Image (spheres, rainbow, N blue to C red):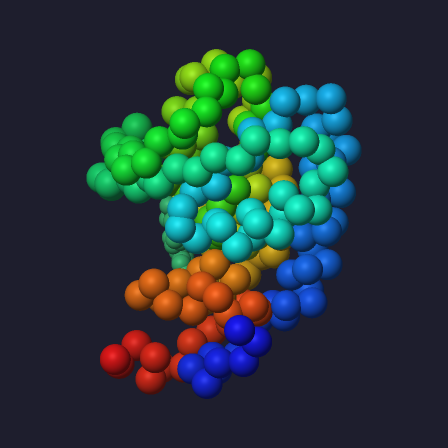
Length: 181
Ligand code: IMP
Ligand code: MG
């Protein structure tokens, strides 16, 4: 949807997102010529971005999905990765591109990247539509970044609050009243 009464401020418009997704896809198309690309979406937040991205990438790819979360605190080595849904694709020898909606602390993504690399993938790179650099706890190398945003809770274009707002086509900040129900 294009308009929502509970969105207070639009941070990134639908048009800005479309333009940026095209630019990222062009870069990815160049980088993955002649490679066996496996695009891995981390559910649920990534599916809107991934659906737009793979339709702009001009390289044949296999799409697969994971549901993963991490628990624990402190350094990356003390975090445990919980996988609720694993890949059904053998990624050994393949070039994997992980698709994320937003990177906040980076803990889950760091663990997922290490896990996929351990399955003998030829390469494991990351793309995220949005990153909040000020919140990062783990230094991860993210090759394709859409937008940097300040430390505000945002929704839309796949990002949810309480599972809602994923279908909003821009990215915005919620009105306070949205948290009350
Ligand atoms: P991380 O492991 O701390 O990087 O967690 C990132 C995950 O937290 C994202 O994939 C989102 O599901 C969620 N998240 C972080 N910030 C936001 C936000 O501003 N809006 C919606 N979801 C968020
Ligand atoms: Mg997520």
